[in-house]
Length: 578
Ligand code: NOJ
Image 1 (tube, rainbow, N blue to C red):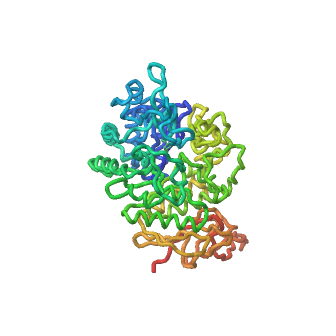
Image 2 (image 1 turned 90 degrees about the horizontal axis):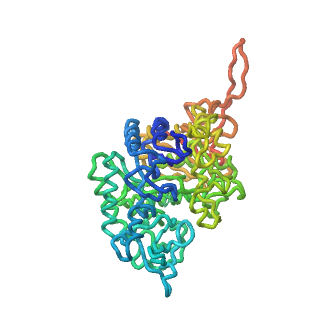
Image 3 (image 1 turned 45 degrees about the vertical axis):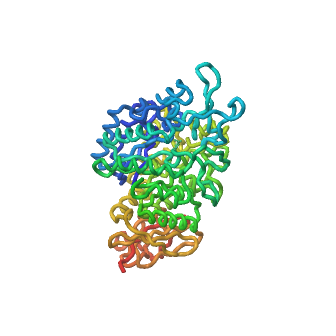
């Protein structure tokens, strides 16, 4: 399992309110105990932080907010000592506008080699006053910004699929290609184990940059899956084949994972052909509505598509760009996914969200393939849905004219200790985003060792996933009715059945199985797990009913009860060997 750390929000050692590399290093043993195999760190490079570090000004250095190169080296060393691999984030689609290359491009003339490293064009209209095409930024507004020449006159336009402070690079230019291979080597030489590649589907644009009036997110597209001119162009694959060669030239297993919002899964599978990425995020699964038929179909499609290229599929439910799944899954099913939630919006039911999130994770962690966990989901952290607007920092909030709340609500600093300053995030007391009060009760120290807590659920799931080698197993769908998602996952000699019940009626468990773990503390609706005594013969449980005294000695009375999985609950069963 790969655990995503959002560096600015995980652990703040120096108390400046922003998480940092020394903070991460100090907390790595927590991840080892959780059962993590690798950590993926969102960007920590030198950056003006216009998009929380996804606007890189120097790919070979660390932003002082996060520490130094020596801190990065130390992090990698300690991670390896803890048997954790380290994946860093590579941002190749765009640089910061404060990158030396972009500064040089602004200072140089149209058509110069400096400008050729980016996508500069003359504007349309008699005086070039209109953008070169009609593309919109993913963050809202135009995807083009016009520059002002050194003489003060309006000049060319540059493309930015994201914020205006994130100019797109020109990947037709061999100079750009060799620079990034060099950057890859820079971090591989420092010992990192691989890369998560940002916007992997965006580097190459269709020749001539034709107009496009469809949605900017491929996952919002309808049945017509012709790739839009800015996404998923066939030319990107040659770049990744080159990168794979670089990775393979290093000792050990160095890997790349693509962040590619590409539809359908068969197109995404192109990115994980044998000579490209080892993995690609399965966003199709992440956005699947909370309906049994949809989940089963999404899982089947992922396996089908990946099997065709012989690659493992991946599973992910939360990250730094989407509403946390402990909140998202409480939203009305079938409605468009919001980009953040405002305090004035209807507030999702926290209890339902957490119950579903735990069930979704219990399903996900049973499935063969690579699994990604976003920091804090192991605590059941909800989205911060009542952030004051004045503290919002995500550029999407401004660029959409405040129509979208943006992604700040899923990036709130981690609560470690309920009774410490900023819940133990750091000693400074002023985290870069305020934490909601609900985070206190969810802090690590409140859940550590507490039976039935979300943290202990994750630990159990991850321990069993590893022990039973479920990640490398094979899954066969089991039909238990229209409202149930169920698989037998077989690995070696053992078979685990995962059952997720999304219906209102309880689902009875097979009598010859044994319950390994359940997503909700109550399985039959009444008893808590600590009150259960496992019956060796069957999955009937004996529930402590009453106590009575015999000759002065206290005895417990038990009654037998059938085991059932209730609504929005998932369970893992050990199945008998045939
Ligand atoms: C995807 C990243 O995950 C997101 O946070 C970022 O804003 C965009 N790419 C642009 O780099």
